[in-house]
Amino acid sequence: MIEEIKSSEEFENEIKSNAIVFADFYATWCMPCKMMSGIIDEIAKEHQEVKFIKIDVDQNTELAIKYNVMSIPTMIIFKSGNASKTFIGVTDKSEIIAEF
Image (cartoon, helix red, strand yellow):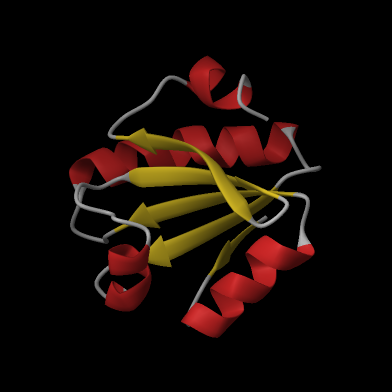
């Protein structure tokens, strides 16, 4: 299951309390984000050891700024609370999985 993040505090709690977190920064109006949504859903079903979260950049601008989200979709993998890999734009499923 992919959890929608509503606040900076909730985001920080998630990345600190899970070993691996996949954060999807998106916007509802973004077509490439919609394309990635199906791919991310597939990966989430196949990799339940990873916590998947979504952050709407229009609702959480402070998080987008903090993590230098300049283009969407931007996807960041966090390991032990630290950003370890960033993907920008439509990304191949195998490329993402290789970083877990």
